[in-house]
Length: 143
Picture 1 (cartoon, helix red, strand yellow):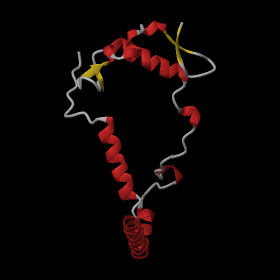
Picture 2 (cartoon, helix red, strand yellow; picture 1 turned 90 degrees about the vertical axis):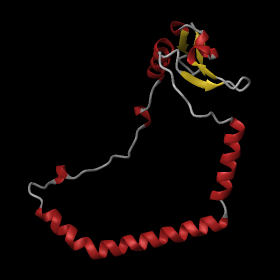
Picture 3 (spheres, rainbow, N blue to C red; picture 1 turned 120 degrees about the vertical axis):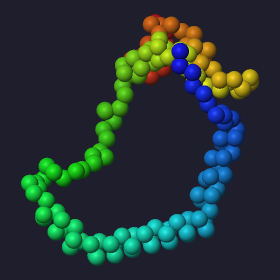
Picture 4 (cartoon, helix red, strand yellow; picture 1 turned 60 degrees about the horizontal axis):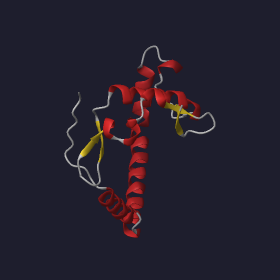
Protein backbone atom coordinates (compact mmCIF):
# COMPACT_ATOMS: atom_id res chain seq x y z
CA UNK A 1 0.00 0.00 0.00
CA UNK A 2 1.39 3.37 -1.05
CA UNK A 3 0.50 6.33 1.13
CA UNK A 4 0.96 9.72 -0.46
CA UNK A 5 1.13 12.67 1.92
CA UNK A 6 -0.02 15.98 0.50
CA UNK A 7 0.89 19.25 2.20
CA UNK A 8 -2.45 20.86 1.47
CA UNK A 9 -5.06 20.61 -1.25
CA UNK A 10 -6.20 23.76 -2.98
CA UNK A 11 -9.87 24.15 -3.70
CA UNK A 12 -11.08 24.74 -7.24
CA UNK A 13 -12.37 28.16 -6.23
CA UNK A 14 -8.98 29.20 -4.82
CA UNK A 15 -7.20 27.83 -7.90
CA UNK A 16 -9.48 29.73 -10.30
CA UNK A 17 -9.08 32.94 -8.29
CA UNK A 18 -5.29 32.59 -8.37
CA UNK A 19 -5.37 31.83 -12.09
CA UNK A 20 -7.54 34.91 -12.76
CA UNK A 21 -5.13 37.08 -10.76
CA UNK A 22 -2.15 35.64 -12.64
CA UNK A 23 -3.84 36.34 -15.98
CA UNK A 24 -4.54 39.93 -14.89
CA UNK A 25 -0.86 40.39 -14.04
CA UNK A 26 0.27 38.85 -17.33
CA UNK A 27 -2.09 41.01 -19.39
CA UNK A 28 -1.29 44.28 -17.60
CA UNK A 29 0.14 46.80 -20.10
CA UNK A 30 3.00 47.83 -17.80
CA UNK A 31 4.10 44.20 -17.31
CA UNK A 32 3.93 43.52 -21.05
CA UNK A 33 5.95 46.65 -21.78
CA UNK A 34 8.58 45.75 -19.19
CA UNK A 35 8.87 42.16 -20.47
CA UNK A 36 9.14 43.30 -24.08
CA UNK A 37 11.90 45.77 -23.18
CA UNK A 38 13.71 43.13 -21.13
CA UNK A 39 13.55 40.61 -23.99
CA UNK A 40 14.92 43.18 -26.44
CA UNK A 41 17.78 43.91 -24.03
CA UNK A 42 18.59 40.21 -23.68
CA UNK A 43 18.48 39.76 -27.45
CA UNK A 44 20.96 42.59 -27.95
CA UNK A 45 23.25 41.18 -25.26
CA UNK A 46 23.18 37.81 -27.02
CA UNK A 47 24.03 39.45 -30.35
CA UNK A 48 27.00 41.17 -28.71
CA UNK A 49 28.09 37.82 -27.24
CA UNK A 50 27.96 36.27 -30.72
CA UNK A 51 30.00 39.09 -32.21
CA UNK A 52 32.67 38.87 -29.51
CA UNK A 53 32.90 35.08 -29.21
CA UNK A 54 32.02 33.68 -32.65
CA UNK A 55 35.68 33.40 -33.67
CA UNK A 56 36.70 31.59 -30.48
CA UNK A 57 33.82 29.15 -30.72
CA UNK A 58 34.65 28.45 -34.36
CA UNK A 59 38.27 27.68 -33.44
CA UNK A 60 37.11 25.34 -30.68
CA UNK A 61 34.88 23.49 -33.15
CA UNK A 62 37.75 23.12 -35.64
CA UNK A 63 40.03 21.76 -32.90
CA UNK A 64 37.66 18.88 -32.08
CA UNK A 65 39.04 15.65 -33.59
CA UNK A 66 36.80 13.30 -35.57
CA UNK A 67 34.14 15.90 -36.02
CA UNK A 68 31.44 15.17 -38.52
CA UNK A 69 27.72 15.59 -38.98
CA UNK A 70 26.92 12.75 -36.57
CA UNK A 71 28.72 14.39 -33.61
CA UNK A 72 26.35 17.32 -33.68
CA UNK A 73 23.79 17.12 -30.89
CA UNK A 74 20.29 18.03 -31.99
CA UNK A 75 16.92 18.14 -30.30
CA UNK A 76 13.99 16.94 -32.34
CA UNK A 77 10.95 19.00 -31.40
CA UNK A 78 8.85 17.65 -34.24
CA UNK A 79 6.17 15.55 -32.49
CA UNK A 80 3.62 13.53 -34.43
CA UNK A 81 0.06 13.11 -33.24
CA UNK A 82 0.37 9.43 -34.04
CA UNK A 83 3.03 9.05 -31.35
CA UNK A 84 0.51 9.95 -28.64
CA UNK A 85 -1.28 7.37 -26.51
CA UNK A 86 -3.98 5.59 -28.49
CA UNK A 87 -7.21 4.11 -27.10
CA UNK A 88 -5.72 0.69 -26.51
CA UNK A 89 -2.76 2.06 -24.52
CA UNK A 90 -5.02 4.37 -22.53
CA UNK A 91 -7.38 1.50 -21.70
CA UNK A 92 -4.44 -0.69 -20.65
CA UNK A 93 -3.11 2.16 -18.44
CA UNK A 94 -6.52 2.67 -16.76
CA UNK A 95 -6.95 -1.05 -16.12
CA UNK A 96 -3.42 -1.30 -14.69
CA UNK A 97 -4.05 1.61 -12.32
CA UNK A 98 -7.43 0.21 -11.22
CA UNK A 99 -5.87 -3.18 -10.56
CA UNK A 100 -2.53 -2.27 -8.95
CA UNK A 101 -2.83 1.26 -7.53
CA UNK A 102 -6.27 1.27 -5.92
CA UNK A 103 -5.01 2.66 -2.59
CA UNK A 104 -3.31 5.72 -4.11
CA UNK A 105 -4.88 9.06 -3.18
CA UNK A 106 -6.05 10.81 -6.33
CA UNK A 107 -8.77 13.32 -5.43
CA UNK A 108 -9.91 15.65 -2.68
CA UNK A 109 -13.54 15.25 -1.64
CA UNK A 110 -15.15 18.70 -1.87
CA UNK A 111 -17.74 18.03 0.84
CA UNK A 112 -15.66 16.33 3.53
CA UNK A 113 -12.24 17.69 2.58
CA UNK A 114 -10.59 14.28 2.89
CA UNK A 115 -8.46 12.71 0.16
CA UNK A 116 -10.08 9.88 -1.79
CA UNK A 117 -8.25 6.83 -3.06
CA UNK A 118 -8.72 5.46 -6.53
CA UNK A 119 -10.81 2.67 -4.99
CA UNK A 120 -13.25 5.25 -3.58
CA UNK A 121 -13.69 7.19 -6.81
CA UNK A 122 -16.84 6.42 -8.82
CA UNK A 123 -15.05 4.95 -11.85
CA UNK A 124 -13.27 2.38 -9.71
CA UNK A 125 -16.62 0.88 -8.70
CA UNK A 126 -16.38 -0.92 -12.03
CA UNK A 127 -14.16 -3.95 -12.30
CA UNK A 128 -11.20 -3.44 -14.66
CA UNK A 129 -12.42 -6.12 -17.06
CA UNK A 130 -15.77 -4.30 -17.45
CA UNK A 131 -14.17 -1.17 -18.93
CA UNK A 132 -13.88 -0.87 -22.72
CA UNK A 133 -13.84 1.81 -25.39
CA UNK A 134 -16.34 2.19 -28.17
CA UNK A 135 -14.59 2.07 -31.50
CA UNK A 136 -16.17 5.27 -32.83
CA UNK A 137 -15.60 7.50 -29.78
CA UNK A 138 -13.41 7.68 -26.70
CA UNK A 139 -16.27 7.28 -24.26
CA UNK A 140 -15.83 4.55 -21.68
CA UNK A 141 -18.59 2.01 -21.52
CA UNK A 142 -19.54 -1.32 -19.99
CA UNK A 143 -19.15 -4.52 -21.99
